[in-house]
Image (cartoon, rainbow, N blue to C red; front, side):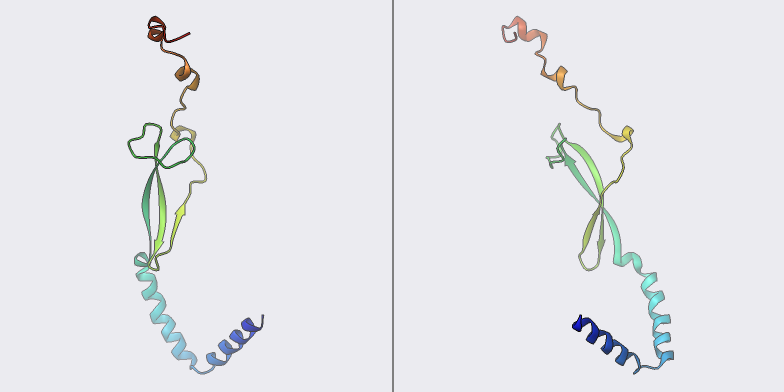
Length: 116
């Protein structure tokens, strides 16, 4: 708390050293230039991931993986943040695998004596 109070007091002291018109002019020049170049300071890039049903990253050719594209927010300081989807429309989800059908032996395996 002491550090905050001393910083606050210093800020009050230095504010009185500059004439108000000079501060206003600096704001009028600075704010528009920052806003005009905002796209250079903050942008979005797509990040593609191939994830399996447990959301473990897999190789792009892996048949158990589905491809997802997330958006990553970046700035000029090198900071990055991934925007995660909050809701996915059911029609956009991949079809579920029928595990029961996949577990049944193929009819030809019985002829070969491999099935029960």
